[in-house]
Length: 359
Image (cartoon, rainbow, N blue to C red; front, top):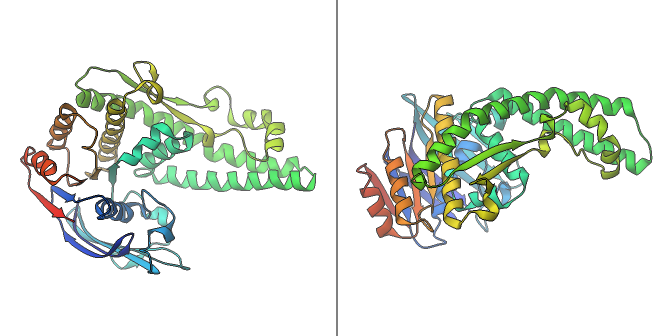
């Protein structure tokens, strides 16, 4: 799969822009603030229907304008695919495939498989469990429509249950029958989500560990583990057990929406014991494993976006990444960097065709 052309109007700090891309490597170079990352984000937007860095649609419109349009011309399975994503203040975001709008955004997810590696990925290590759950959900959802549907339904029921708990507290009342309906639905949608997350990690973890060993040169051991109270007790039992606590808190305190992913290096939390270079290598390995997993599941090579990843990596780790990128497993790659000479030297070493766009 390739992105042949991209055009932008009023996207973030870019008034207009038109690009024709190489089928292998494309580099955007320039000083900070010139829009390099925003171009990568526009490509991400075409794949996921939202920004990677700021999912609030109105904040992706250029200052002073009231709409944005992103248009991409792709080639997938020997077929031309034209995707347009547009948003106007006060209106609903529209995504069209070959002129036909999607009824639901979720129908588009997974059609254009894509993986981004960015400094913002540090949030996976530094932030709370929600960020790591979103990572798992995002990977699985690109190749499993049923998982995405269950996740949307689960979150809707969760919102309804939480609203009911607030209503009970506000009105000093309680209705066990109505609450049990939501409990059953959380169990119905949450249980298959849990099973698929565990099955996913069984496949994903060995891929991740292999990628990390290749990047780091095999000098450190890393691991991932899934943390959930649902691994110990059945969902309905936990909901019943935590009922009084939930009524006091006025929200649902147990469920797949509370699960987490533990990141470790040499059996210690990487957040506390990993160096900056180790953490960055960990995150790159995580995303390269995501790439490999999606490729195998979707039977299509995802587009890979590399946003400023050469910064803060030593020359040895950069050379490992270049070797990986040069592998035939990779398709089209987009790179942003502040150093034009460094970028050109890196891509020359891949012996692949490339284009450099200076901003």
